[in-house]
Image (cartoon, one colour):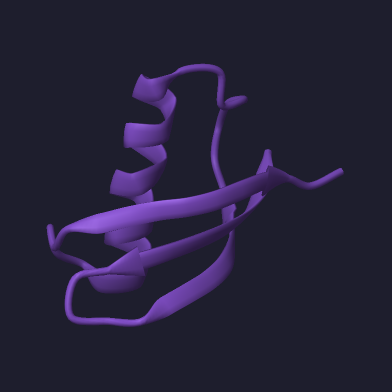
Length: 58
């Protein structure tokens, strides 16, 4: 599934991207997994990240 995400990372401004995530976001644990994926895709490290918004794309 593809999600449009808006997030802010430590030492960085607001960013947005389309992220492919293997399942539907249904609980807080899924959001934490999505945050980890964004950290890996965008930054390759473990900086603090805040997911501002996400929307499942058709």
